[in-house]
Each structure stands twice: as C-alpha cells, then as structure tokens.
Amino acid sequence: MGTGPVSQALLDSLWDFTDAAASAGRFQQAADDAGRDDEARAELATQLARAFGLLGRFDDGLAALAAVQESTEEPTDRLQARVALEHGRLLRSMDRTDEAVPFFTLAARKAASAGAQFLALDALHMLAIADAGHEEEWAAEGLALLDTATDARTRRWGVALHNNLGWFLHDSGRPEDALPEFEAALRAAETVGTHEQRHLGRWAVARCLRTLGRTDEARTLQQQLAAERPDDDFVRAELALLDQTADATGVSGAEPTIVP
Image 1 (cartoon, helix red, strand yellow):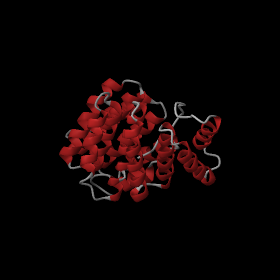
Image 2 (cartoon, helix red, strand yellow):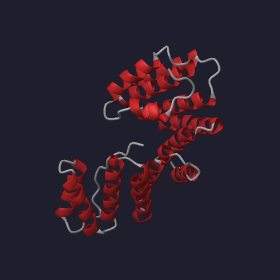
Image 3 (cartoon, rainbow, N blue to C red):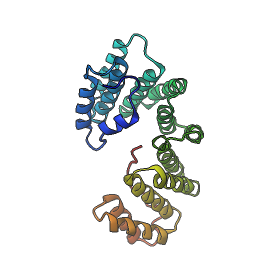
C-alpha cells in the first residue's frame, strides 16, 4: 500500500459530500489500514474527523483529531496543517467561528511551509469565509497563490474562491462588484471544474443579474438551467421570484453551496 503524503486523488475517491456517513466509513477503513504508513493513516483520520463534523458528531470529530495528535510524536508540517484545518472546520460548524480563525491561519502557515499548495488554498478559502472583516484580503491572497498553480485539480480552487468572494460582495450590497467574481468562478468551472460547479456557477451569475435588475438575462439563464434540471429547487425558486414581479431585485433567496 502507498506511503508518504496522501494524494488528493485518493481523498477525492473516498469523499462523497452528499453522503457523509458513507464517507466516514471509507475513511475509517482507510485510516485503520495497517498497510499504510503512520503519516498516511493520520492524514486519512483527519478526513474522518471532517466527515464526523458534516454528520453533526462534533465531539467524535474533535476526538479523532486529538487521537491523531496523541499518536504522532513528530508530526510533519503537512499533517499539522491538516489537523488545524479540520479543527477549524469543526469549530466553525459548532458556531465557534472566532475560535476557528486561528486554526485556519495556522493551517495556511503550516501548509505553506510544507509546500502543500492545495492545502494552503483550502485554508485560505476557509479564512476568506470565516475571518469577518478580512474576507477580501484572504481571497486576494488565495487568488495570488492560485496564479502559481499548474495542476488542474489545484486550480479548481478558483471556483470556490471567486464564488465565495462573489457572495460576500453580493450580500454586502455590492452586486456590481460581485458579478465579475461570479463570472470568474464560472470560467474556472468551465475550465477545470465539475459539471455541478458549472451548473451552480451559471445559477450564481443569473442570481446576481437579478439583483442588478437585469431580469431578462437572469430569466433566460434560469430557463436554460431549468431545461437541463427541471426538478432543481433553487432554479425553480428563482424563476418563481422572477415571474412574481417585474422588480425582483430586492427579493432574497437561498443559494446552493459549491463543493471545492
């Protein structure tokens, strides 16, 4: 079995963010595999902690991370980044965001020290969400790092970074600044993203167009999405809002979440 750092390809194969319970089972099995070295098993256990967090099993998640720390005498910077990142995610899910920010900051620093670009981008993307008042700064740092990436899977972070920045600007009353970010997220999705990211990217552009009063363009985009996915609740909700009134710009609505 493989040794050394766990590849992102392996993590992607074990993750299903629509089924955290099944993902937890796979990560538990992988972390228990004696054929892997201690570092790899510890790194896989951090993803078990993340899956526990998605299931609302926060104590189990924190316990899994504590076990990783207790079982590793000299953790590498990469492993420390993983532990800090997932600790921060758990705290944020527990509505303890202020406590989470230092963990995300530590994760970004340790990942950079390890030369783990993908992990550093993950940490910066979390900081851009969690560190109130500094969203644009962290997003800019993440995008600057992204400019140096050549791997397609790593460059996919452009989807989440631009999308999250777009929503921050949109919800801060700056839709004219948000639209270019949503459009950049869509371009990234079209280049290196998943089919789901492309769908959600088009939805976000249409949603922002509605806020800007460009309702005909928004309706056209949503109708195209509806033709592809007639049962998409987010698309149907937007079309209903667009049809209710000639001025739907001030009406808020829920938005789907893009998975990096």
